[in-house]
Image (cartoon, rainbow, N blue to C red; front, side):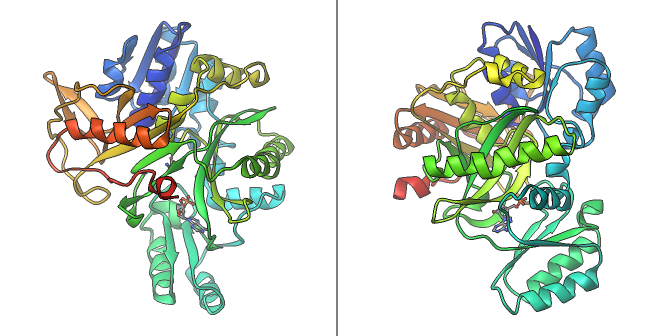
Length: 426
Ligand code: AMP
Ligand code: GLY
């Protein structure tokens, strides 16, 4: 069979790599892809952007693609799945109504309240004055408030305000349009204490099944300091998600979300990514839902999955998930993201990457922001590579991943040296 993967990051390279491993997959296309997806066996890039719905659907029809897998949230929120389904094309991902679970924080909050899913208490505002009055009043009682632009803001639309000045500055920039229309509605919520974890669940509209839990490292600096990024590394499994926590997550979060989708007549098929805050008593609250695979969580979850990925994704898209029990390789996986110096602020592109072919057993280099020019691999993005290792123990996986990183060079390369530190410390 033939599969088309849409997107160009580390998540998409991992999807392509895993799909290409399946005997049942003859060819994988990636639109637009990166230098890594172009180099995978059975795989080739297609020069089509993720928002070119007409071009993508035409390509899928012409090439008789059996399944299209959508990586990023923006095309999902803009209705790429609806566009494909209207043309009778099989596609993995939720339609634009379902994708609002990520595309609008106020929609997601209202959804959670209706479904009785545990989450931080929140209020939604559409004007600066009311929001200002609320934070003035509330900050007299709590130490921190979380202020969120409603729409997609590439992970940058969230401010944790510790005092009134910070809160007002955040509200001001959001209502003044720093995030475009994403900030014309603002959600203000209570700060949740605990450890974050990501549970990516497969949902076919009838069944919802979690993949192994992962944890990512959102901040740029070691010790979880500095500004947030798209994610600087991840590991799987995440011990903070105990059996008790997972059972709670299934019953109080995933099953309730599925029931609420069904109650609203939303046929949700794809990944429902639950961003969780795990509390000390092993219960959890939802920080956010995403409508897609996580990045870099995918880079550590999929290498441990023992099933053929195309069978799992196909069954999900067709509503037959129950017929595919998930199986896992034992052990642990770690991904260290190598970024361009300056990221998440301004950074340079076009730097030559060397040392990619130096092998370390059981390691994989997933490309994120790269491109090939005249046989050389160049940087083309903030997050450049996701260096991943699989091993019997987390410590061995960490050691192998850093060993592989040490061979890879490009000017101003930066990576955190403390991925998985929370677990290794304990
Ligand atoms: P979000 O885009 O909603 O996932 O928020 C981005 C990040 O902000 C999360 O990964 C958390 O680290 C943090 N965050 C968001 N909401 C809360 C909350 N209510 N309490 C504590 N931290 C939060
Ligand atoms: N790693 C965070 C995300 O994919 O949203």
